[in-house]
Length: 106
Image (cartoon, rainbow, N blue to C red; front, top):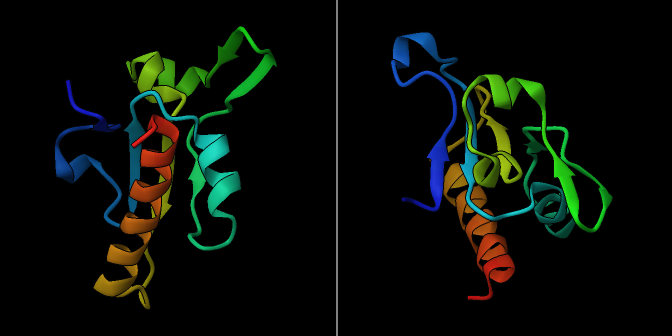
């Protein structure tokens, strides 16, 4: 099983062309967002929260989409606009990957 999973329909015709929902296995998206700050504009794709250190839940939408829990807690939503360049996408990818590696202990 891969560390990265695209969430949503597999048919590109059923997806928004400028938006990506991606699950990062065993990553806590809220922690990742806090650590990257304003370097990359993205948001957590689920309402992850922890009512205790033992319990974590995620959005009913991700559950309904069939996203496995280990990916749902690490889901990020990313969007591009008319002024976004390939270099912007590459930079954002690098920042997210480096932070994810830190969480996984790499």
